[in-house]
Image 1 (cartoon, one colour):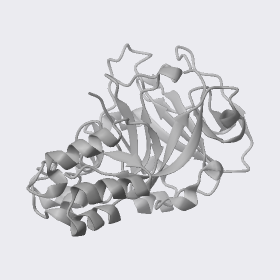
Image 2 (image 1 turned 180 degrees about the vertical axis):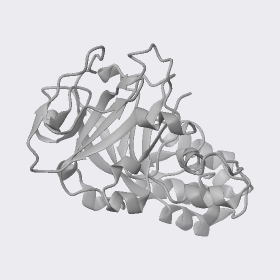
Image 3 (image 1 turned 180 degrees about the horizontal axis):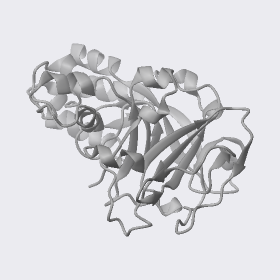
Image 4 (image 1 turned 45 degrees about the vertical axis):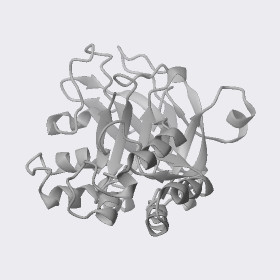
Length: 293
């Protein structure tokens, strides 16, 4: 829902919540790496780059550009240098080195006719994450015909604490177990005063690795859980809440003017993964969703 320094979020919590609730809420914060778009030629871009939006991917000779069968090749969205990330500060098991590459079928080839949707299992091939291990011989690949690469935008990183929506399954479980999933409930963390303070604190979606996702609409973990359960359970079924707790944010990429990226109406792209799959480097099991205003 928001992000910032621990001290700033602590100050916010103690001003708007009872002491016990403030402490419990602070214990639910998670560290995330915020990725900032940086202009070429800047001092930060020269020394502190951890990845990039857009451009062209560097792939080993035996790794093909990802394709969604019957639709076409995916657009290249971002590359993240795992060794350059402050991964020790996170609570997810990222690779210590190598590069994470993110691809998405963005509608360039069909004027947006085919959509990649979490609830449509047949469309899952329209979003991919690849991990290229360190030491692999790689070369920059030319974009397949019909795809226009996005402009290159360097990304720098900083670690911040992230807070989830009070109706996020993990937060709800801490303060109001059994309350309706994805809805406000009767507790100070759902009071309008506290919500306004959170929204005023920072409302940018942003680019991020790890931490709590900054969802545009309902928590993306719920969407991912629904997809993984094939939409066969209702929001009242406790299995949906349990499954939502099995997924963590791998990466989110916001709309970005500097990269000519616009996801729907000022939306964002999200990749989530189960911790056990992340530990086993099974990035093929990451699930994708997107949200917009």
